[in-house]
Amino acid sequence: MKKIALTGIKPTGAPHIGNFLGAIQPALELAKTHDALYFIADYHALTSVRDKVLLREQIYSLAATWLAAGLDPDKVTFYRQSDIPEVFELTWILSCMAPKGLLNRAHAYKAATDVNTEAGHDLDHGIDCGLFYYPILMAADILLFSCHVVPVGQDQKQHLEITRDIAQTFNQTFGKILTLPEPLIQEEVKTVPGIDGRKMSKSYKNEIPLYTTSKKLKKRINQIVTDSKDVNDPKDPDNCNLFAIYCQFATAEAIAKTRARYLTGGLGYGELKGELFHLVDTFLSAGRARYDELMTDKNQIDIILAEGAEKARSIAKPLLEKVRKAIGVQKP
Ligand code: ADP
Ligand code: TRP
Image (cartoon, rainbow, N blue to C red; front, side, top):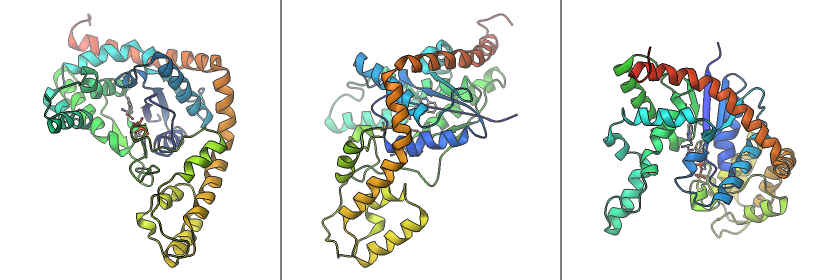
Protein backbone atom coordinates (compact mmCIF):
# COMPACT_ATOMS: atom_id res chain seq x y z
CA MET A 1 0.00 0.00 0.00
CA LYS A 2 1.26 3.45 -0.92
CA LYS A 3 1.55 6.07 1.80
CA ILE A 4 -0.84 9.01 1.70
CA ALA A 5 0.35 12.59 1.11
CA LEU A 6 -1.89 15.62 1.59
CA THR A 7 -1.42 19.35 1.35
CA GLY A 8 -3.44 22.53 0.93
CA ILE A 9 -2.75 26.04 -0.29
CA LYS A 10 -4.80 29.13 0.51
CA PRO A 11 -6.24 31.16 -2.37
CA THR A 12 -5.04 34.44 -0.95
CA GLY A 13 -3.47 36.03 -4.03
CA ALA A 14 -1.87 35.16 -7.34
CA PRO A 15 0.39 32.13 -6.71
CA HIS A 16 4.07 33.08 -6.78
CA ILE A 17 7.41 31.41 -7.40
CA GLY A 18 7.85 30.67 -3.67
CA ASN A 19 4.56 28.76 -3.61
CA PHE A 20 5.55 26.95 -6.76
CA LEU A 21 9.04 25.87 -5.71
CA GLY A 22 8.26 25.48 -2.02
CA ALA A 23 4.90 23.74 -2.25
CA ILE A 24 3.44 22.89 -5.66
CA GLN A 25 6.42 21.34 -7.40
CA PRO A 26 7.56 19.15 -4.48
CA ALA A 27 3.96 18.03 -3.96
CA LEU A 28 3.67 16.97 -7.60
CA GLU A 29 6.94 15.08 -7.31
CA LEU A 30 5.63 13.32 -4.20
CA ALA A 31 2.42 12.34 -6.00
CA LYS A 32 4.50 10.00 -8.16
CA THR A 33 5.17 7.72 -5.19
CA HIS A 34 2.20 8.43 -2.90
CA ASP A 35 -1.59 8.46 -2.95
CA ALA A 36 -1.99 12.20 -3.03
CA LEU A 37 -4.78 14.53 -1.90
CA TYR A 38 -4.21 18.20 -2.72
CA PHE A 39 -6.73 20.90 -2.03
CA ILE A 40 -7.55 24.59 -2.08
CA ALA A 41 -7.90 25.85 1.48
CA ASP A 42 -10.57 28.45 0.72
CA TYR A 43 -12.01 28.61 4.24
CA HIS A 44 -8.53 29.30 5.59
CA ALA A 45 -8.39 32.24 3.18
CA LEU A 46 -11.53 33.69 4.77
CA THR A 47 -9.38 34.75 7.72
CA SER A 48 -7.95 37.46 5.45
CA VAL A 49 -9.94 37.82 2.19
CA ARG A 50 -13.20 39.77 2.49
CA ASP A 51 -14.01 40.39 -1.15
CA LYS A 52 -16.24 37.70 -2.66
CA VAL A 53 -15.35 38.43 -6.28
CA LEU A 54 -11.66 38.41 -5.50
CA LEU A 55 -11.90 35.20 -3.45
CA ARG A 56 -13.68 33.42 -6.31
CA GLU A 57 -11.11 34.58 -8.82
CA GLN A 58 -8.26 33.50 -6.57
CA ILE A 59 -9.77 30.06 -6.06
CA TYR A 60 -9.87 29.61 -9.85
CA SER A 61 -6.41 31.01 -10.27
CA LEU A 62 -4.96 28.60 -7.72
CA ALA A 63 -6.81 25.63 -9.20
CA ALA A 64 -5.59 26.57 -12.70
CA THR A 65 -2.06 26.91 -11.33
CA TRP A 66 -2.02 23.39 -9.87
CA LEU A 67 -3.42 21.97 -13.10
CA ALA A 68 -1.05 23.96 -15.31
CA ALA A 69 1.86 22.85 -13.16
CA GLY A 70 1.03 19.27 -14.09
CA LEU A 71 -1.43 17.96 -11.49
CA ASP A 72 -3.33 15.05 -13.06
CA PRO A 73 -6.82 14.92 -11.48
CA ASP A 74 -7.16 11.25 -12.46
CA LYS A 75 -4.21 10.42 -10.24
CA VAL A 76 -4.41 13.04 -7.51
CA THR A 77 -7.57 13.73 -5.50
CA PHE A 78 -7.88 17.45 -6.12
CA TYR A 79 -10.63 19.39 -4.34
CA ARG A 80 -11.77 22.48 -2.55
CA GLN A 81 -11.89 22.48 1.24
CA SER A 82 -15.31 24.17 1.35
CA ASP A 83 -16.83 21.27 -0.65
CA ILE A 84 -16.08 18.86 2.22
CA PRO A 85 -18.54 19.51 5.08
CA GLU A 86 -16.95 16.71 7.13
CA VAL A 87 -13.90 18.96 7.64
CA PHE A 88 -15.95 21.46 9.61
CA GLU A 89 -17.63 18.90 11.85
CA LEU A 90 -14.25 17.42 12.68
CA THR A 91 -12.92 20.93 13.37
CA TRP A 92 -15.39 21.33 16.23
CA ILE A 93 -14.65 17.88 17.64
CA LEU A 94 -10.91 18.56 17.57
CA SER A 95 -11.34 21.99 19.14
CA CYS A 96 -12.69 20.19 22.18
CA MET A 97 -9.38 18.29 22.40
CA ALA A 98 -7.16 21.34 21.87
CA PRO A 99 -5.76 23.16 24.92
CA LYS A 100 -6.27 26.88 24.48
CA GLY A 101 -2.71 27.50 25.63
CA LEU A 102 -1.43 25.48 22.68
CA LEU A 103 -3.20 27.84 20.29
CA ASN A 104 -2.05 30.92 22.22
CA ARG A 105 1.48 29.95 21.17
CA ALA A 106 0.67 29.47 17.45
CA HIS A 107 2.90 31.79 15.40
CA ALA A 108 0.24 33.74 13.49
CA TYR A 109 -1.88 34.42 16.57
CA LYS A 110 1.16 35.27 18.65
CA ALA A 111 2.43 37.69 16.00
CA ALA A 112 -0.96 39.45 16.01
CA THR A 113 -1.05 39.75 19.81
CA ASP A 114 2.57 40.96 19.86
CA VAL A 115 1.62 43.80 17.50
CA ASN A 116 -1.22 44.74 19.85
CA THR A 117 0.99 44.64 22.91
CA GLU A 118 3.55 46.86 21.22
CA ALA A 119 0.87 49.34 20.17
CA GLY A 120 -0.54 49.43 23.71
CA HIS A 121 -3.86 47.88 22.60
CA ASP A 122 -5.84 45.11 24.22
CA LEU A 123 -4.14 41.74 23.59
CA ASP A 124 -6.90 40.54 21.23
CA HIS A 125 -7.75 43.88 19.63
CA GLY A 126 -9.04 43.29 16.07
CA ILE A 127 -8.25 39.56 16.11
CA ASP A 128 -10.99 37.23 14.83
CA CYS A 129 -11.63 33.78 16.26
CA GLY A 130 -10.94 32.42 12.77
CA LEU A 131 -7.29 33.36 13.09
CA PHE A 132 -7.16 31.73 16.51
CA TYR A 133 -8.90 28.55 15.28
CA TYR A 134 -6.83 28.38 12.10
CA PRO A 135 -4.56 25.55 13.32
CA ILE A 136 -7.56 23.39 14.31
CA LEU A 137 -9.15 23.74 10.89
CA MET A 138 -5.82 22.71 9.43
CA ALA A 139 -5.62 19.72 11.82
CA ALA A 140 -9.08 18.64 10.60
CA ASP A 141 -7.98 18.99 6.95
CA ILE A 142 -5.12 16.63 7.68
CA LEU A 143 -6.56 14.13 10.15
CA LEU A 144 -9.77 13.52 8.20
CA PHE A 145 -7.78 11.79 5.47
CA SER A 146 -5.47 9.62 7.62
CA CYS A 147 -2.47 10.92 5.72
CA HIS A 148 1.12 10.06 6.54
CA VAL A 149 3.04 12.97 5.08
CA VAL A 150 2.23 16.63 4.62
CA PRO A 151 4.57 18.50 2.28
CA VAL A 152 4.75 22.09 3.54
CA GLY A 153 7.13 25.00 3.89
CA GLN A 154 9.19 25.58 7.02
CA ASP A 155 6.59 28.11 8.24
CA GLN A 156 3.95 25.40 8.59
CA LYS A 157 5.99 23.10 10.83
CA GLN A 158 4.36 24.34 14.01
CA HIS A 159 0.89 23.64 12.59
CA LEU A 160 1.91 20.04 12.05
CA GLU A 161 3.12 19.81 15.64
CA ILE A 162 -0.21 21.16 16.84
CA THR A 163 -2.02 18.65 14.62
CA ARG A 164 -0.04 15.77 16.11
CA ASP A 165 -0.67 17.01 19.67
CA ILE A 166 -4.41 17.19 19.10
CA ALA A 167 -4.47 13.77 17.41
CA GLN A 168 -2.57 12.22 20.30
CA THR A 169 -5.01 13.64 22.84
CA PHE A 170 -7.92 12.32 20.80
CA ASN A 171 -6.39 8.86 20.41
CA GLN A 172 -5.51 8.60 24.09
CA THR A 173 -9.08 9.46 25.01
CA PHE A 174 -11.08 7.56 22.39
CA GLY A 175 -8.79 4.92 20.90
CA LYS A 176 -6.34 4.94 18.04
CA ILE A 177 -8.41 6.31 15.17
CA LEU A 178 -6.39 9.28 13.93
CA THR A 179 -3.13 8.88 12.02
CA LEU A 180 -0.23 11.08 13.18
CA PRO A 181 1.18 12.90 10.13
CA GLU A 182 4.79 13.86 9.48
CA PRO A 183 5.72 17.19 7.89
CA LEU A 184 7.83 16.94 4.78
CA ILE A 185 10.00 19.99 4.34
CA GLN A 186 12.17 20.17 1.28
CA GLU A 187 15.65 20.98 2.49
CA GLU A 188 17.08 22.40 -0.72
CA VAL A 189 14.25 24.86 -1.31
CA LYS A 190 13.45 25.94 2.25
CA THR A 191 12.51 29.57 1.83
CA VAL A 192 12.63 31.37 -1.51
CA PRO A 193 13.47 35.05 -0.97
CA GLY A 194 11.37 37.78 -2.53
CA ILE A 195 12.56 40.78 -4.54
CA ASP A 196 13.48 42.60 -1.31
CA GLY A 197 15.37 39.69 0.26
CA ARG A 198 12.73 38.82 2.86
CA LYS A 199 10.79 35.54 2.50
CA MET A 200 8.78 35.72 -0.70
CA SER A 201 5.22 36.24 0.48
CA LYS A 202 2.00 37.82 -0.70
CA SER A 203 1.84 39.56 2.66
CA TYR A 204 5.12 41.41 1.95
CA LYS A 205 4.12 42.20 -1.66
CA ASN A 206 7.61 41.13 -2.70
CA GLU A 207 6.61 38.17 -4.83
CA ILE A 208 7.43 37.20 -8.39
CA PRO A 209 4.11 35.96 -9.81
CA LEU A 210 3.94 32.68 -11.67
CA TYR A 211 1.84 32.51 -14.81
CA THR A 212 1.97 36.16 -15.71
CA THR A 213 2.99 37.52 -19.13
CA SER A 214 6.68 37.55 -20.14
CA LYS A 215 6.57 41.34 -20.12
CA LYS A 216 5.33 41.56 -16.53
CA LEU A 217 7.75 38.86 -15.43
CA LYS A 218 10.67 40.78 -16.89
CA LYS A 219 9.58 43.99 -15.20
CA ARG A 220 9.28 42.22 -11.85
CA ILE A 221 12.68 40.55 -12.11
CA ASN A 222 14.21 43.92 -12.89
CA GLN A 223 12.77 45.15 -9.59
CA ILE A 224 14.84 42.67 -7.55
CA VAL A 225 16.69 44.79 -5.02
CA THR A 226 20.51 44.64 -5.02
CA ASP A 227 23.25 46.79 -3.53
CA SER A 228 24.82 49.47 -5.72
CA LYS A 229 28.05 47.69 -6.68
CA ASP A 230 29.40 48.29 -10.18
CA VAL A 231 29.93 45.66 -12.86
CA ASN A 232 33.60 45.26 -12.02
CA ASP A 233 33.27 45.21 -8.23
CA PRO A 234 33.61 41.83 -6.52
CA LYS A 235 30.25 40.82 -4.99
CA ASP A 236 29.09 38.57 -2.18
CA PRO A 237 26.95 35.72 -3.55
CA ASP A 238 25.96 34.58 -0.05
CA ASN A 239 24.34 37.88 0.80
CA CYS A 240 22.51 38.62 -2.42
CA ASN A 241 18.86 37.76 -2.98
CA LEU A 242 19.24 38.01 -6.76
CA PHE A 243 21.84 35.25 -6.57
CA ALA A 244 19.65 33.25 -4.17
CA ILE A 245 16.66 33.37 -6.54
CA TYR A 246 18.94 32.54 -9.48
CA CYS A 247 20.11 29.41 -7.62
CA GLN A 248 16.53 28.11 -7.61
CA PHE A 249 16.49 27.93 -11.41
CA ALA A 250 20.04 27.53 -12.73
CA THR A 251 21.99 24.28 -13.10
CA ALA A 252 24.74 23.45 -10.60
CA GLU A 253 27.31 24.20 -13.26
CA ALA A 254 25.89 27.63 -14.08
CA ILE A 255 25.63 28.46 -10.38
CA ALA A 256 29.31 27.62 -9.84
CA LYS A 257 30.33 29.83 -12.77
CA THR A 258 28.18 32.73 -11.62
CA ARG A 259 29.49 32.40 -8.07
CA ALA A 260 33.05 32.67 -9.38
CA ARG A 261 32.14 35.76 -11.42
CA TYR A 262 30.56 37.35 -8.35
CA LEU A 263 33.72 36.84 -6.34
CA THR A 264 36.14 38.15 -8.98
CA GLY A 265 33.95 40.97 -10.30
CA GLY A 266 32.94 41.49 -13.93
CA LEU A 267 29.31 40.40 -13.66
CA GLY A 268 26.74 43.18 -13.40
CA TYR A 269 23.42 42.72 -11.63
CA GLY A 270 21.62 43.79 -14.82
CA GLU A 271 23.21 40.97 -16.79
CA LEU A 272 22.27 38.39 -14.18
CA LYS A 273 18.69 39.71 -14.08
CA GLY A 274 18.48 39.19 -17.83
CA GLU A 275 19.75 35.65 -17.47
CA LEU A 276 17.35 34.94 -14.61
CA PHE A 277 14.44 36.26 -16.67
CA HIS A 278 15.23 33.84 -19.51
CA LEU A 279 15.53 30.91 -17.13
CA VAL A 280 12.23 31.63 -15.38
CA ASP A 281 10.38 32.51 -18.57
CA THR A 282 11.42 29.28 -20.28
CA PHE A 283 10.65 27.29 -17.17
CA LEU A 284 7.10 28.63 -16.99
CA SER A 285 6.14 28.90 -20.66
CA ALA A 286 4.46 25.47 -21.08
CA GLY A 287 2.32 25.87 -17.96
CA ARG A 288 1.39 29.44 -18.88
CA ALA A 289 -0.52 28.33 -21.99
CA ARG A 290 -2.54 25.75 -20.03
CA TYR A 291 -3.19 28.27 -17.26
CA ASP A 292 -4.59 30.81 -19.73
CA GLU A 293 -6.77 28.16 -21.34
CA LEU A 294 -8.28 27.09 -18.00
CA MET A 295 -8.87 30.66 -16.88
CA THR A 296 -10.83 31.39 -20.04
CA ASP A 297 -12.95 28.23 -19.61
CA LYS A 298 -13.53 28.00 -15.85
CA ASN A 299 -16.19 25.36 -16.40
CA GLN A 300 -13.39 22.86 -16.87
CA ILE A 301 -12.11 23.74 -13.41
CA ASP A 302 -15.58 23.41 -11.83
CA ILE A 303 -15.97 19.90 -13.23
CA ILE A 304 -12.55 18.76 -12.04
CA LEU A 305 -13.12 20.14 -8.52
CA ALA A 306 -16.61 18.60 -8.26
CA GLU A 307 -15.22 15.18 -9.16
CA GLY A 308 -12.38 15.64 -6.70
CA ALA A 309 -14.80 16.57 -3.90
CA GLU A 310 -16.77 13.39 -4.50
CA LYS A 311 -13.62 11.26 -4.24
CA ALA A 312 -12.44 13.11 -1.14
CA ARG A 313 -15.80 12.75 0.61
CA SER A 314 -15.80 9.01 0.00
CA ILE A 315 -12.69 8.91 2.22
CA ALA A 316 -13.84 11.55 4.71
CA LYS A 317 -17.27 10.10 5.49
CA PRO A 318 -16.18 6.70 6.89
CA LEU A 319 -13.45 8.31 9.02
CA LEU A 320 -15.87 10.87 10.46
CA GLU A 321 -18.33 8.07 11.18
CA LYS A 322 -15.65 6.24 13.16
CA VAL A 323 -14.94 9.42 15.11
CA ARG A 324 -18.64 10.03 15.80
CA LYS A 325 -19.03 6.50 17.11
CA ALA A 326 -15.89 6.76 19.22
CA ILE A 327 -17.03 9.93 20.98
CA GLY A 328 -20.56 8.63 21.50
CA VAL A 329 -22.73 10.90 19.35
CA GLN A 330 -23.53 8.04 16.98
CA LYS A 331 -24.62 4.49 17.80
CA PRO A 332 -21.77 1.98 17.48
P1 ADP B 1 2.29 33.53 1.26
O1 ADP B 1 3.37 33.66 2.30
O2 ADP B 1 2.68 34.18 -0.02
O3 ADP B 1 0.94 33.99 1.77
P2 ADP B 1 1.25 30.91 1.65
O4 ADP B 1 1.37 31.10 3.13
O5 ADP B 1 -0.10 30.91 1.04
O6 ADP B 1 2.17 31.99 0.94
O7 ADP B 1 2.02 29.57 1.28
C1 ADP B 1 1.52 28.50 0.48
C2 ADP B 1 2.56 27.41 0.43
O8 ADP B 1 3.75 27.87 -0.23
C3 ADP B 1 3.01 26.91 1.81
O9 ADP B 1 3.28 25.52 1.77
C4 ADP B 1 4.28 27.69 2.05
O10 ADP B 1 5.15 27.07 2.95
C5 ADP B 1 4.87 27.77 0.63
N1 ADP B 1 5.65 28.98 0.50
C6 ADP B 1 5.19 30.26 0.58
N2 ADP B 1 6.15 31.16 0.41
C7 ADP B 1 7.29 30.44 0.24
C8 ADP B 1 8.66 30.81 0.04
N3 ADP B 1 9.03 32.07 -0.04
N4 ADP B 1 9.56 29.82 -0.10
C9 ADP B 1 9.19 28.51 -0.04
N5 ADP B 1 7.93 28.11 0.15
C10 ADP B 1 6.98 29.05 0.30
N1 TRP C 1 -1.97 26.74 6.49
C1 TRP C 1 -1.42 26.37 5.21
C2 TRP C 1 -0.65 27.57 4.66
O1 TRP C 1 -0.88 28.69 5.05
C3 TRP C 1 -2.49 25.95 4.24
C4 TRP C 1 -3.19 24.71 4.69
C5 TRP C 1 -4.47 24.62 5.15
C6 TRP C 1 -2.63 23.40 4.74
N2 TRP C 1 -4.74 23.32 5.47
C7 TRP C 1 -3.64 22.55 5.25
C8 TRP C 1 -1.38 22.87 4.41
C9 TRP C 1 -3.43 21.19 5.44
C10 TRP C 1 -1.17 21.52 4.60
C11 TRP C 1 -2.17 20.68 5.12
O2 TRP C 1 0.19 27.40 3.82
